[in-house]
Length: 230
Image 1: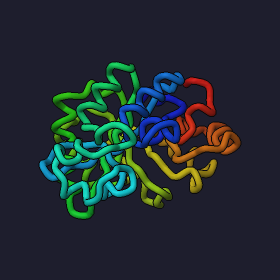
Image 2: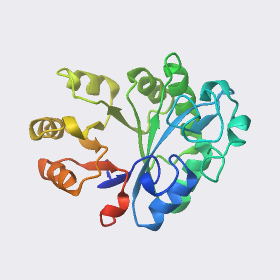
Image 3: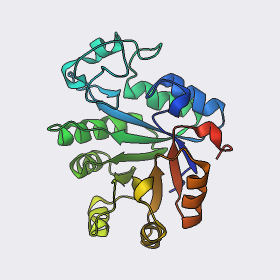
Image 4: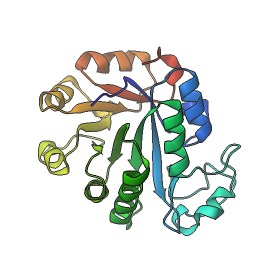
């Protein structure tokens, strides 16, 4: 899997409103090759870009994402643009030549539905330039059934002792783990098993260099402008 070394967190990191098309534009403009963004389902089943369960923090609206239709979400102001549809984000990535990490952001009871819906949608619309990731094994498995030809990554905070069994069962190509829990032994074990390792969220040059020295494949960062294009 050809991972970019630097991946802009939530589209453009701190350089633009999170999970926005503007963020994708900024990432491409500064030469960042890879981006990450979150997707969840609106009330009408349309995949949209959003990190939180509610729109309160990032838009001028209020309410749960799952309770609002895609049209209602599109009427909100996300830092100067409407809440983007997943379709718009992948089209913009295609136009800009960006590698994308599409994270399936699940609600408590909608993991399988999100995986199935997003997987089916991506199978029809996405070129597969990147990976699909999630903390939810249910969502990953459901997406992979709908879109088996894509690359998948399992998100964890701290690597569990039986991680290899999970990774093998899920058929992933990479493990994404919290940088604060990544050490040389953990990174080496994952790489030795044939998986890529991407660590989140790294905004310190010293920490990024340390992780790279350990053998980490990539880092997610809020400040993609801190590093040369890669």
